[in-house]
Amino acid sequence: MNKINWNFNNTYYNLPSAFRENVKPTPVKKPKLVLFNKDLSSDLNLDFSKVSDKELSELFSGNSLPEGSNSIAQAYAGHQFGHFTMLGDGRAVLIGEHLSKDNKRYDIQFKGSGKTAFSRNGDGRAALGPMLREYIISEAMNGLKIPTTRSLAVVKTGENVIRESYLPGAILTRIASSHIRVGTFQYIAARQKNNELEILLNYVIDRHYPDIKNSKNKATELLTIVMKKQINLVVNWMRVGFIHGVMNTDNMSISGETIDYGPCAFMDEYDPKTVFSSIDQTGRYAYCNQPIITKWNLSRFAECLIPLIDENQDKAIKIATKIVDTFEKVYEDKWLDMMRDKLGLIGVDDKDKLLILDLLTWMHQKKADYTNTFCHLMNIKIKKDKSYEDQDFQNWKKRWNERLKINSNSPEKYFKLMKTVNPLVIPRNHKVEEALKAAEKMDLKPLTHLLKILKEPYTEQNDIFDYQTPSLLDRKYQTFCGT
Ligand code: AMP
Ligand code: MG
Image 1 (cartoon, rainbow, N blue to C red):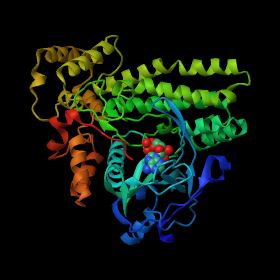
Image 2 (tube, rainbow, N blue to C red):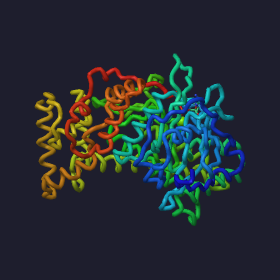
Image 3 (cartoon, rainbow, N blue to C red):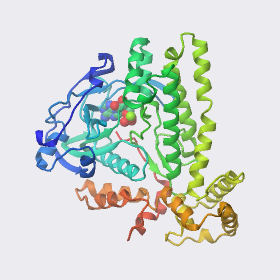
Image 4 (cartoon, rainbow, N blue to C red):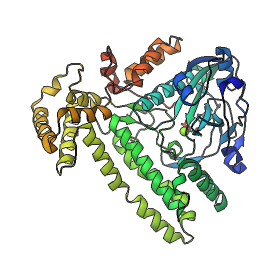
């Protein structure tokens, strides 16, 4: 399969053996390609045009591994809903790192590829529905210009997996700038071998943050930079109403990409306490808690780095705490800027925060749709909604209009700004479900159409009314862990 242009250069494989298990995907019975992301493959400088569907099925099921790959399961740990556990790739293998044309490095991972040393009691497999769901949402996130892992392909395995019932098994090919997580650091830190921790630190800096390579204290610099990346990520989630659902430390990437699409979903009606995941009983990962949890996760990351920050533990803790304690201020500034952009507010005014909070309070009280409220403010045609005739909203709009006049900004200018950050369409829960239901019966039309629309969420498109309208049935929408 030389024609594909694989350019493997596997560096994680060369790290100490404690970091991974060398393991191959378990072959599957009857692989069949379901989805393939042609655009992404060209971005990766891969050419599958001379490869038959049968060969693609063999490849993306792991039945035939490409030359140059070295498949491994990565070790990691994690705080799951606050409890520390040793984990690792229990149903995934990293087949290698591919270098694209610009020498950018990408992990190629199969998810659902069989048991590994880290499978615990699991079967190492994944069901078709959740893998297609990850494909849809991750590609939607990419369309929304939010850092994310990508999805290259989904194959059905031709085998069933046993969950509450028998479900068709599937494997997702996931592309990431790396799969190194906060939990990876936790795993190595728990082994209490500082040389291993240092190897991981240097590896991560080399791979993701080479600019800090020569800094005096690499560990503190890494903490600072990862904090910035994760704040940027969570601010983006807040911008579009995305709720990750399982922000365990093993699901927080060091590169700042959204990773592990399980019970995630997008909020319709604005309610800061929104939770979709059936297992998140206490709302630990609710919409409004996402920044707080990001800080909590970063504190766990900081703890791992303590031995590398300073030999004197007390001093190291003080340094790390000082950095993590800047979280609120950095987050608030970034969030305010993001909300200003959503409202087309150019420059800074003392009353901006109040104006923004008053709109959010109104949306919450009136159960207004988060995405569509901003569409309404941009004069984008959406389904008629009487709540926007409300007097309180009209009064708020007057204040907003006054504020827009500051700096004598023209409507062209502020609408242009708003249109870069306010999506006209998000993956509405009913549309995602509809696409998955049809795909179960191997009707992929609704899914591919949905993907097409979600590719350009900031562009006005014809006939997408249905995709912009929340379903009343989604008020009680629940998601389940994608196992
Ligand atoms: P996730 O909920 O996908 O983030 O997974 C959390 C942990 O459970 C990771 O270590 C996974 O590899 C592992 N895991 C999830 N599902 C399975 C499965 N079916 N078989 C083995 N391990 C699994
Ligand atoms: Mg995970």
